[in-house]
Length: 413
Ligand SMILES: [Fe+2]
Ligand SMILES: [Fe+2]
Image 1 (cartoon, protein in one colour):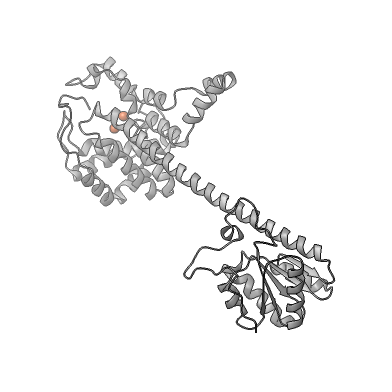
Image 2 (image 1 turned 45 degrees about the horizontal axis):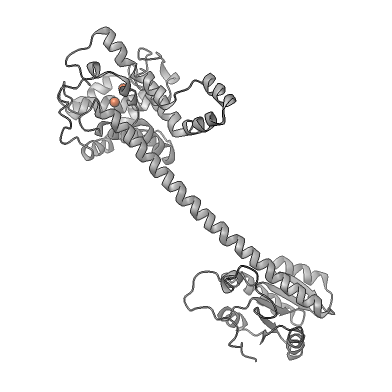
């Protein structure tokens, strides 16, 4: 048995990456068959090996190695991966098929193109070889130029295939990183905006964080997906963003508000929607039809997160019995995200200390929440909230308010 020659490129021990033509020839173009490619000829007969080797060398192919096909042929090929493998067909059909299958199933060898060289025309054999994954099927007699061109075409095809795969993988990785960056910066902007609004009204800004996490827990209990719950967590943090538009004289007024002041305070829901979704459908259409810039502006605003946040900002003070504001929606006409945020928001307001009231003990909070069943709150949402009360409590403890900021003890809740 001929040994595999040293000049065939060895694969580094312990290498896990799939070697490709591209890996072995780090060039800007495919390797040249005659001067660069390593061609391995595997066959069962010395005559076959010698003939093909002579044909290749006469054609100017410099790096040709021959190997008798025996049981350890796959191991030898695996250890010295060529650029092209020429395999003898037809002499031992069953062993031939076994070797072919072993080659095609061997992950490490799947990038190595196999060309079967047959002594006679056999369409059935050709079909089987191509079906199993052989790159090409050559039948004698053939001209030297045909042999050379088909081998060079094979090298070219594999090189371009590998290049495309490599660029595709690089592109996917770049997109994945950009997407992660985008999601991270979006989350940070949402949190900044939510906290900026809440700092005007709340001493620590943790209220919005807790409400977001309560809504996430409730939504999971109601069967929503983890991805949707994540979006709700962020969107719910913006529920009171409309308070940005409420004057300090009202927002921070000690004591009860006058009716007209209370009316304005209630408008934080509409302001919130306007902040997050500043154009009506009609306005959107007008802007779209006028300018390209308008389209760009609207494409940002139309993200699922912002649309969800706008619905929450608008509906988190609606009540199940229809007596809430600003729209007076009732029952399931209130978007589910608004109903969930209503439960989370009220529980957090009750259970935390505010400048105008002490924190209410947790158990008492639950009792007060229960009193709002089917009047203020959706019973199904309230049940989900109670079923997950342990997790709610854990979040409450984890994100407990600490040191008051900005001396806002006079703030109006
Ligand atoms: Fe609110
Ligand atoms: Fe709130």
